[in-house]
Image (cartoon, rainbow, N blue to C red; front, side):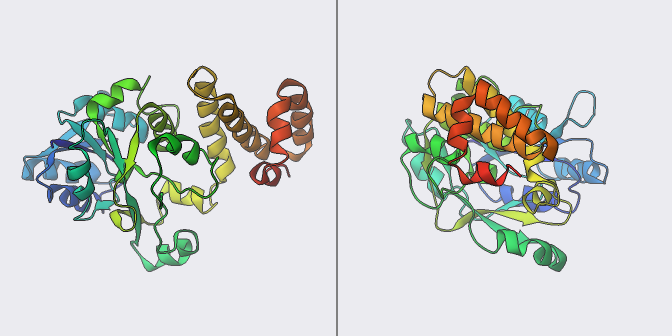
Length: 312
C-alpha cells in the first residue's frame, strides 16, 4: 500500500506536529501532504520545519497563499497526492498504532474501495473537558455495527435510526475510486463539507467496516475548534446544517440512482433546518408555502421528530 495522508492546516500550531508524527509511524504511509491555509498563528513555520525534517512530508499552499477553507485544501491535497490510497487527518487530531491494521487486510480484495473505522476522543485541557464532555463523553461516536455497504448511504442520512457517523480521520479510499464523484469537497461549505463528501462517496462506492469496537484515530477537543462549537450549540447548529442539507438536496435532485423516498427524506431535512432558522413570524408562512409547493416533504415532516422540534 502507498497511502497519501492529507492534512489541511489552519490555526493548528500546537497540534500539527503530533498529527504528522502519528502518521509517520506507518511504513504504508508514502507521503504526508500538508496544505497550509493562511493560518493566523505560527502554523506555517511549523509546517516548514516538518517539511525540512521529514522526507515524507510535503508542504503546499494555495496559489494565492490565501485562506480557502478545509474543503478546498483537501481538494488540493487530493490533486497533489501520488499514493494509490488516500487517507485524511485533521491537524488537531492524530492516528493510533492500529490505524491501518484492517486496511492492510481488506484492501487485498480489489473490489473493496473504501474502509472506515472508529474514532475516539481526547480533551486537550480541563476546560475543554468541562465544556464538552457532556456532548462527546469518552465514547466512540462513529458507526458501531457492521453494515452492508449498500445500507451505508441511507444510514448516514439518518433513515435507519441510531447509526453513527463516518469520520474522515478513519476513512481510507482507493484514489482511483474518487473519479466516480462529480467533484471532491464542496468549496461552498465552510463547515460540514466532510459530511457532504461522505454522503456522496457512500452512494458512489462501497464502504466496508474496519475496526469498529476500538478507536483507530483520535479527535482532539479544544476550545477553538469551530465544529465543536457547532455541536455544543455555541454556534446555532441549524444555521450551518441548513447549508449542508441545501447542498445535499440540490445534488440529490439530479442523481438518478437515489430512490424517491430517499430524496423525500433529504428534502424534509433541508426544510426542517430552513424553517428552524427563520424568524418566528416567517415560520408559518414557509409551512403554508411548502404545503402548496412541496406537500410531501411537509406532510412527512410532521411525523418526524427532528422536523417538529425545529418548527418553533
